[in-house]
Image (tube, rainbow, N blue to C red; front, top):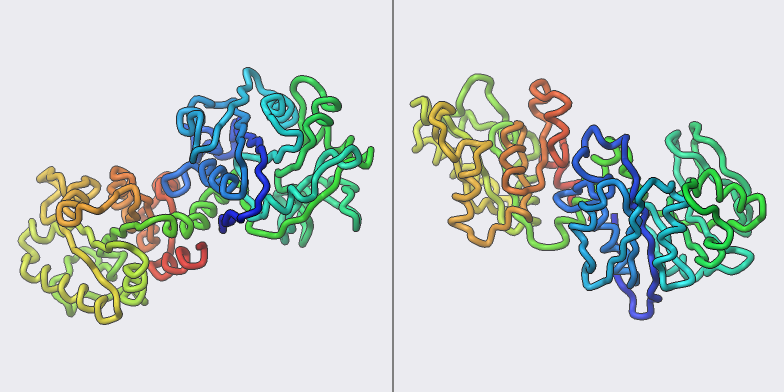
Length: 426
């Protein structure tokens, strides 16, 4: 996932973002907010979308809102990144076509870019603007190629870009899909579209095809629609690189099951019993070079049970720090809770005392710019309470149910996978 860099000679444009849908397919994992406001690593998906549009020249943004509109308006207010935000409120559902028609009445420009608020395509909006619209082509539809899919219908077009047909959803080895992005001539749309509720996709676009008025522009780039839980999770992973690249961030790691292999029903007593998970010394060294600071936060009730001495625990952690350092990495601190569950302390995860203890030593820590990696639900809850991005490592999959897995922002099989995820998604 890439965000385009602003150019010196880019054209400004007005964009309408459709953000009023119910998002019923995503409600199993995002029930408390409209779909475009689904959180991606602590920030609404819609915020990423608007930031990319603004970087590429959008100087007027109109949000077509309906379902839970107060959440969207409460977040973006009247200005976002110094750009004016207007709202087109649907008192009743207008469908995609009706929502666009109403939003166009708020636009100050004759040509508008319209897009869905729950999908992303890596594309150059300036190139789309160069296509322009006229009386013979009052609308341009952005297509993107896809392979081996059955979730989307396909679009056919001729060599000049004139759209010839829309085909129903069925398995395709390859084809072009509607990316949900349009370049629209406002005057034509207001003059020729129905008043009230209607579907752009099923009512207006087919008529435009029959009249030879709809042309396609193809952009090949990363595309994702967060409309279903599986793709919502995929979006979290793909956007992680952008999140880590945006500003300094801090890494918190659980120990047993994440850094080293667990020994069932046993507390690791010494360095001889400490067995790294495969590839982890190198992975931690690599992650520590990416993060501003790297910490370990671990529950060690073996101390409270008098099974493990603090002296031996310190030796284990000294060995851990030394091994990572030998590979060019840095562990800035290891913080542990020695208490039993029955002691009801404030430092045993999922309680957040270990996080605050780390911040006492390193006051620059910003929990909202932090990632917590764990293999237990208590690790994920610890991270969530502090506002961190949470990563679940699948080493205890037999303990998880569907609801438990869903609470983590990201899931990985190993720390090496997390290294790859951050690296390739930048």
